[in-house]
Each structure stands twice: as C-alpha cells, then as structure tokens.
Image 1 (tube, rainbow, N blue to C red):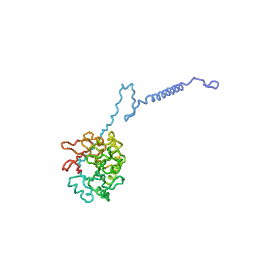
Image 2 (image 1 turned 90 degrees about the horizontal axis):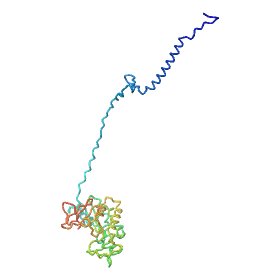
Image 3 (image 1 turned 180 degrees about the horizontal axis):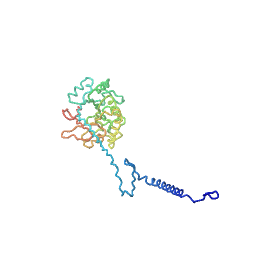
Image 4 (image 1 turned 90 degrees about the vertical axis):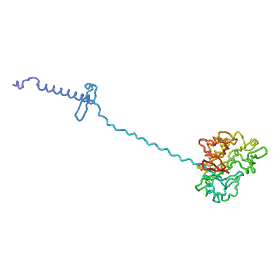
Length: 340
C-alpha cells in the first residue's frame, strides 16, 4: 500500500542478485575455458574416432606409436662393368729396302711380297749425300729426281706401308763443299773406316737440313722414317776426331736430344708418321757406344729401333720400345728388317 503517494520500499530484489552472480560465474568459466583451450592445444589430437586430449602427466610417459612408415625397397643399380677393349693382335714388322727404280717400273709391291715384307723401304738419302726426291733445301743434291715426288706420292697413297730410309749425318758429299758442317780431324775432314766423311749433329744448319728432309718426306706420304747414322761417328779411328765446335765429347747426348726435339717439332703436322732409328746392341742394353744415343733417348723419341744382333747374342726386350733385328734374309716368323 502506498504511503503519501509512494509505494513502500521492500529492499533489493533477490532475483537480480542471483542473476549477477550467475553472470559472473559464467564469465569466469569462459575465461578458464579459453585459457584451457590455449594450454591444451598441443595435447589435442583429431582423428577419425573424434577429438582426444592426451596429457603427458596422465599418459605414464607412453605415447601412441606412430603409424608404421611405408618402406620403399631401395633398388641399387649395379653398373655393368665396361668391357676392356680387346687389344689388337701385335703384327710383326717386316721391312725390305728396295731400289728407288722399283717405284717407276711398278715392281715394288711384287718384290716386297716375294721377300715376305709388310713394309717397303726406299733410300731417300744415301751415304754419298744424294737424294732420291726433289727437295726445297739449298743443301740437297738430287740425282735424276725429276718427277720422283709425283711417283712417290702416288705409291704412298696406296695400301702398302712405306718407309723413307735416310743416312742422316754420314754424308760424303756436303763436307767436301762446306767444312763448317763436318766432323774434323787435325788435317781437315775426318774419315771413318770406309773413307766416308761425316757431318756433325752439332751444326745447327746440318740438323735443320735433316729435319727439313724428314718433314718433306712425311708430306710425300711415307708412313715411316728410318734414320740410319743418326748419331755422331763411332766407327773407325774416332780418337783422331778433333774436339772443336763441331765435336764436344761431353755434349754428344745433349746434342742428339736437341736434334730429336727439333725433329718432333718439324713433324708436328704429321703425328702418325713413325720414327725408327738404327742403333747398336750396346745402346739397347744401357751402355754407351760413343754415338751420343742412349736407351733413354730412344725410349722417349723413337717409335721403333733397328739393330744388328751379332751371332750368339740375343735381342733385348725393352718395355715401351719396339725392337726390330736387322737381318740378311727374311723369315716367315717374327719381325725383321732387310736393309741390304
């Protein structure tokens, strides 16, 4: 009932107070739920079976084993071994020295086959100094060589292996016209046991002359250069040789190495041309014969060597060096060179 126009005051409503308390509790629960969500996020797992919370302090230190990984078998490819190339069977070398005239008369191949040879050799520079081909060198002396180069080139273009044989420094002609090229004695030019003069490998002009001839012969198509007397003289009375600018006993091997280096350079355009050197059995067994040649030089610069083997001696075997015996008659077996 109102008094003086006002309703009487009965105090705060209990319902409103309870509502406020409820709202406060809900807010606290909400805050706790959000905090719990952040705290528990690392431990919540989602799977086909639903949501699962795994707390470390309730799990006894055990975790669910990971799903077994799918193992893919590793296939190791074992490379097939590369087969080693089958070495070509070694063929015997059988060379025969034929007259240059057989180039023009057409009998070279027939004579080579009759001798059982596989390589035909032609003497392009003789001991008397004459040449069997036309050269551009001013020192060269050709004898009846007109048209020889054409005949040589035509023959070397065939299927037969060919070699040019040269007497390099044993030259009986040049010392007579130019003593600056020769090996000397106290009385002039030195002569060997067959009264043949020698040019000196220490003469730069003489070395250039020989290397020029070799390059020209390679250009004519020869497969091989056979260098005889490619050394200092070691036959006859060598004690009579005068020591001078053309003969220094202490520099023989050094000079021959210089020559081979110059020859290598001269043949640079013809890498397939083989260089063969005539030497002695003494050199091939590691000794010195006074020529300036050594086994090491031959192993380094020669493709093969020719050597006379005295009766009762055997042919040495030198690794990396093909050795061909010089014979007086060819045989059906083995390698050989018939130079006379």
